[in-house]
Image (cartoon, rainbow over all chains, first blue to last red; front, side, top):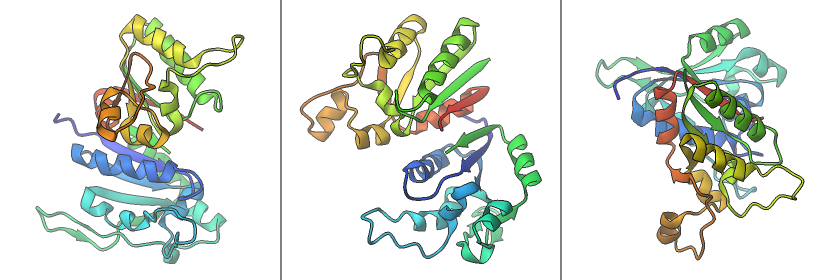
Length: 135
Length: 130
C-alpha cells in the first residue's frame, strides 16, 4: 500500500469518564504502521487529554497520558490544540505536556509539536485532511 | 464512490448505529461500493447474535446480517474493543479460553489495521457516533 493520505484524528472528549480518548489513541498507535501523514486535533473537553500531571491512582484506571509523549516516535507530526477550548476551561499551553519529534532520516528535530490554533486554522486543517477520524 | 463506514456506538442506546445502517443501505442501493463497515468502541455490540429485542422493535443485529448477505458486505468488529466487551468468535474463544461464542453470522473480528486500511482505500470514511 503506497498511498499516503493526510490523516486527522479529532479528539473532543475528556481522557477519562469514557473510553473514547484511549481507544482513539489505540487507532493512532496501530495506524502508525501504515506510514500516513498524521496529525491530531484536541478540542472541547479533548484538550484535557494533554494536561500534564494527571494521576489516576485513586480511580483504578490505567494512566495512558505518558503515551501521548511518545507520539512523535509514532510518526505523528502535529498535535493541534484549539485555543478557544483551552481558554474556556481556564487552561493555557503552560498546562499542557510537551511532545518532541525527530525525523531519524534527516535528523530534523522539533522540541514541541503541540501547537495552539484558532478556529479558522482548525477549519482549514480539517479541510486539508483526506481522512478525519472523530472520537 | 467507494465508502468506508465506522460505527462507534452500541445498538438501541444510540441512534448512531441506526443512522449508520440506513446510510450504508442507501449507499449500496444507489450503487456505491461499501468497502467495509468497521465497528469500534461499544459499536462492537452490533455483532452479537444473542440480541433479542421485543418483537415490535427493529432487530438491529439481524438487519446488519441481512444487508451483509445481500451485498456481501464486510462487517468487522475491532478485536481489542470486542475482547473488552465480550464479543467472541471461534478463534477468540480458543485463544482466550472462553466457553462460548456469540458473534453473529457475516461478522468477523479483526484488528484496528482494518479500519486504517479502509480509510486509506475508500474515497470517504463516514463515522457514526455521538
